[in-house]
Image (cartoon, rainbow, N blue to C red; front, side, top):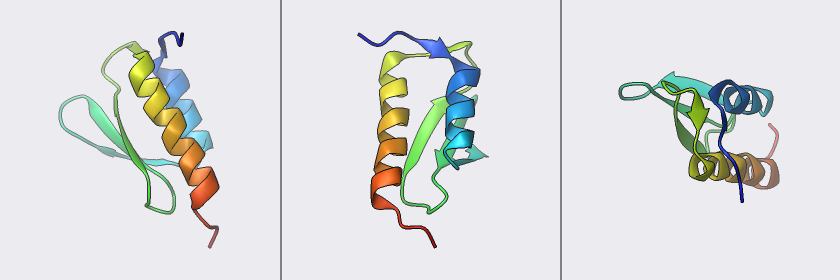
Length: 71
């Protein structure tokens, strides 16, 4: 079972993977891979991220690494 993680840890993972952010609705931010193919929305207004969102983030990073080609 996956445990919740601090929001800043998820944000750092996304930054290190090359994702860029833009503001979403409310306290959400939308992170897009550097190739523009994969997107994930993260609620950055809370101290921790739920296991479901953590799985979405990890899946987006994995798909980008596997499917996106370097320019």
